[in-house]
Length: 136
Image (cartoon, rainbow, N blue to C red; front, side, top):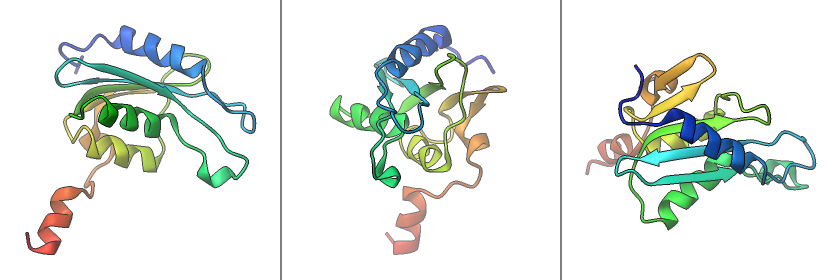
């Protein structure tokens, strides 16, 4: 699955550039991420750590914030990298963020190639589940 219409190398380069802005004095593990929306807009972000370790922000948190500041929408493809420019797998919290802002069809570059979010976060819980459980 090549991800039709997605320039994966351009996303990778945007993620690599974002990683250079990471604030990671504690882990020394810069992370950059870039995503392209279904209507062609590209956003990028980096991780931002904090001395209170648990409140650090993953790069994907910044990416989702940028998406909403830029008008919202859904991601079609996302590429997350470490300092070496290689694909990283997002943590569980970030997989949920990407699911909610891209859905099951959103493509993610992983260390083993392109995967749909439905494969990366199978049986995901989301807004539809909340609506169903609330009876709306």
